[in-house]
Image (cartoon, rainbow, N blue to C red; front, side, top):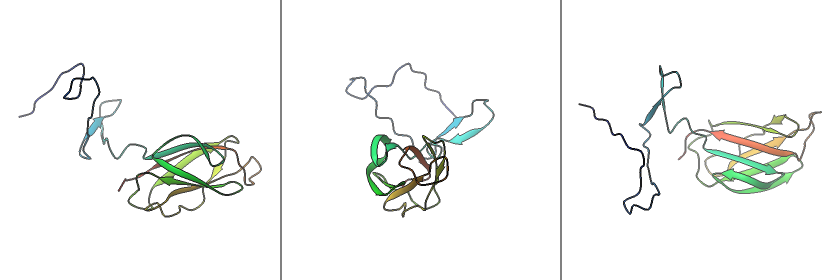
Length: 135
């Protein structure tokens, strides 16, 4: 027998208005069209960063950054990924990005190498995201 909970607001036990909702990896959501379901946890972006060179402007799950050289930056994760099979994507001011190799996503995070419009290494502002499984 299934049940349904209808509420307007979820608050913490103290009634302060904040929430601490935990969602297990078995949770699903219904697609916009209503005909498909997806795993909620697996579909989330696990890391993203917007940086000017290695200077992080805004981020999620990024602990630190390192300037390896011109157009070569490493971003270290706060919470680690489980494997190297993550998918990285992003853009920079020149609307072109090439990704170097991952620098061991199990312990470090990821490396990004933006290029300029002629394909050379560039220190452009970079926005990069990573999807995959967290450890």
